[in-house]
Image 1 (spheres, one colour):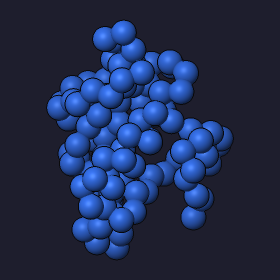
Image 2 (cartoon, one colour):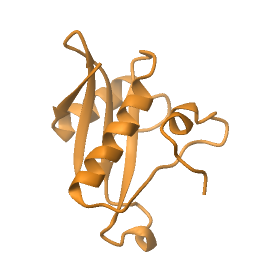
Image 3 (cartoon, one colour):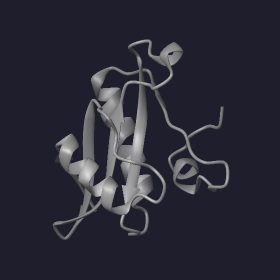
Length: 114
């Protein structure tokens, strides 16, 4: 699996096509894709935290992660977003998941439930 830089528009088109319950984002700081053999299999969109109290300039929120079902893509994208965030100087990366979702991808990259 390889990382692929994406324009937010392209990532949002993927979200519109494949995401189970969320709509495309209104904006974001960056988008990254996951590709297998040149085919886009997943996207992540990261941006400012939606909650104003968390928007301190040092916190990045992963707004969307969406895949076509290719195994391990979510974990790959979360890890890539965290790496990009560190390189950009962010101190914390946050995201949200539904209560009924297991969060296996987040656990796989060492995320902590707060």
